[in-house]
Image (cartoon, rainbow, N blue to C red; front, side, top):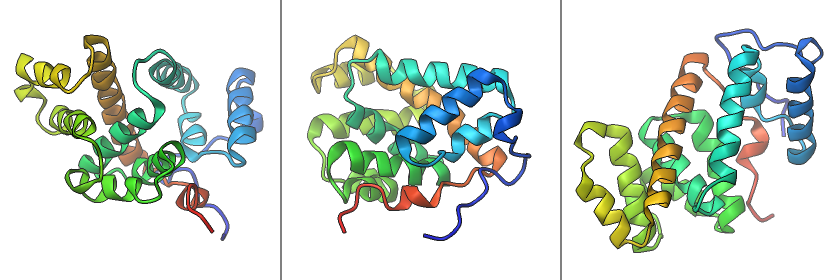
Length: 192
């Protein structure tokens, strides 16, 4: 691998030692777990109050949910692909590979989720996620009924919508800041 890229190109990336202790600790924990500092952490540290709110909500989305981590990451990638978010497509495409154990699924979802090798249940989830991203004003009670028919509870449907909404925000911030994925994300979940 070559030297890593800057976390973002349009705003200054704060130095770790200049950050508040709680944010520095969170970044250090993430770095230890991943083996590198995911650039989203360095980028959001630009505004500490936003960093705290962003990652508190992110943690809630992945900890208090009826969805599996694989399902969450599939939603993130389908949403991010619809938004052309380079950072999230690469970073969360890697997490799809990691949590699904499928080396192809992340790339399929980035390229065209409609052609991905997923169950009918997951296709209903992804169709809804992209509809909520691309044309939210057309979402109706019938869409929720379709998700229930696919096997999702009302709480799981709320969770799907929450992940979609959060990553629409995240994608827009990544575009604004020109966040760049760490090179390491390109290799996670591949054999060899």
